[in-house]
Image (cartoon, rainbow, N blue to C red; front, top):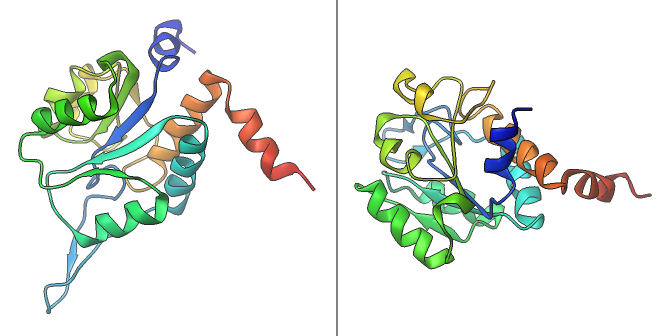
Length: 176
């Protein structure tokens, strides 16, 4: 692993994610009654639970507002959820202040150009495999997986491995 990437991962205390296109594949299903649904990858969810138990705070920052996002966040124990963020940089600054963290202690995963203002400020800028190509030169890490298909799990595992919390987390599942 690249030593510069490792240096960016070691101090991380929070992982902030966009939702649509990162935790989902970006598609939104709206039925004839106007009810919205999204698909989430259970492995992403479990990775976020493991990451939280390891001491890294997960948070969501999304431009849309959806009860589906609120419900998924509650299921995963994600307490910090910013929805309807039309100015993601402003929301990021509020979130950073709330967490009392510095930029270098935060990772952000985005998938589209609206995420650029945040990606250019955080300690670890990350994206999914199927993100807008404009993001690729701006990020330190790019998942091998598309949004909504395990990209977040891949990053959670990477963070835990670099920070030395993966083996203890895994050991909890191996106990008889």
